[in-house]
Amino acid sequence: MTVKAEWKKTGIYLEHDLGEGKTRRRTFNGVNASATGDKIAEFAEIIGKLTGENVVNIKVTRTEELSASPAVSE
Image 1 (cartoon, rainbow, N blue to C red):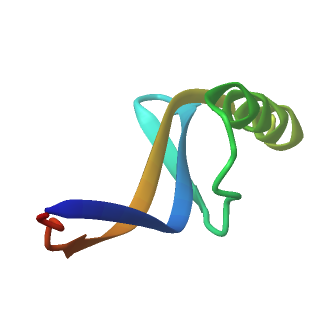
Image 2: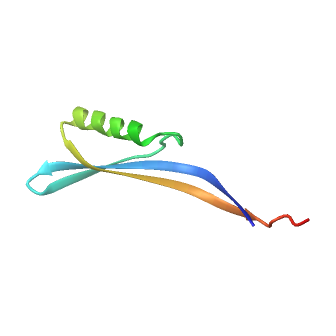
């Protein structure tokens, strides 16, 4: 059996420390499939600077659809 993975979407979740034990989570969708970990970390740093809130956690979700086809026998 041959399995093929097709990328569908990528999302980023940033968690910000608001102090006093409070956090805020921001969600960003429509992220490019080729975004690297370094680029995502750079993006999180920029968002932190723009908002004035310290980013304490970054989560990335990638959704792929798998399709299987039977193995070809000779």
